[in-house]
Length: 210
Length: 102
Image 1 (cartoon, one colour):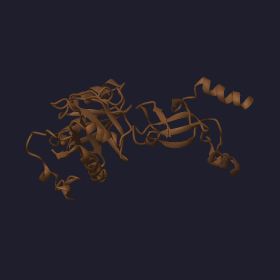
Image 2 (cartoon, one colour):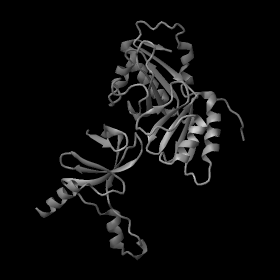
Image 3 (cartoon, chains in turn green, red):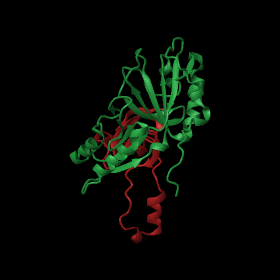
Image 4 (cartoon, one colour):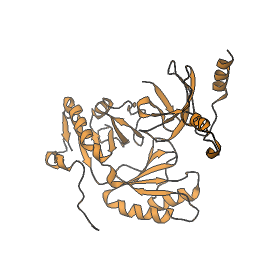
């Protein structure tokens, strides 16, 4: 059995690093896109009305699973919990934090009489971040949800379809200049299609790879 | 294309959902006691309603939960959405009964 292997992001073959713009100045650019690979994605299931379950999750990742539909608990770029269904959530961690979160969840939820499930789905998906003043217009070309900040603001999430691809999507805290930033989590085999589609849809606004 | 109000996620486009056929068909408790005709009736025979139809849907691209829906098959109007294990709201039952009587 192979104990270690080389991680390879589903978009590695696009060599996005080589295209990334170093300078912070994005004036004249409508859309900035980048891949954030290897984030920890842990699916948890349990009963939000069971305080033992909520306490165990809270103990493991210092956050309670959100009970409001289509929301995310926690701050951008830290450990977060995304609502996926009435009894299902996704714990999103940094690439380094995945193992620790998995072990902590497993340890705390493996309690007698507690009905829960923890599944590491880290390598099932990657994260595409899209921001910039025209990011919303790009997404709106392939997504039927109303993404206006008054409806889909920071901390909101959705599982929906963007140009035929089922994605988990969230808006993180607004960027420095007030523009919204979206994170899309497609399954890895759809990542190339979604990236190239987004890139094509962004052309008219001016795109930079971040 | 029409909108469906997922009981968990809220209003979404129909393309996010999959159709699960007629609702409220209970699996016979003792299939071994049924005749072939009775078993075939359970397996295959479905209403082909023009009007109010009770059916199952699943939010495939969203929360992946199943639920029941009352839809007018003629107009595609979604009349009610209710959870698995629940019976349709009274006004829907009245609509169906009223149609039967007329």
